[in-house]
Image: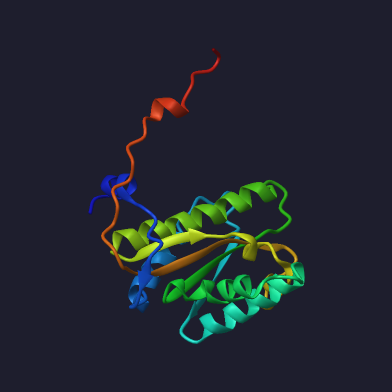
Length: 186
């Protein structure tokens, strides 16, 4: 697959199954993430891998987080929350690590971490690994972040779900770039 085909055809793959990416595939994804634009070369990111039985532990942590914010959660919501990490054989959590810097503001560091996450998606697709970037409420709950070892200067950018696609990949819709561009001044 050439680079332009990769950029034009990448799609999210929400339905995943075993096997998880191999160690070599994961290494390529992480190396791709490390090529993200990084003003100041401060590398404002880190990654957490979760697979196997650790996915069940993460599901328990998700439930604890849910109950810390929604004490009256229904049994159905609790079970759905517990099963979230089981949607893929591997999760790769992308964490933005924001540091005080004289010339690189926090928003640039967040964007750099987001670009690192995008690099993971592209490298996954290039290798035939299914991937979907999710965040949702579980990325914002302090109890969950603490349980994952995040510090006060860190935040979750992505829960990247990785595995083997269950279905054929869909064709992405064709969008007209002109709908998103205007000249300035008008």
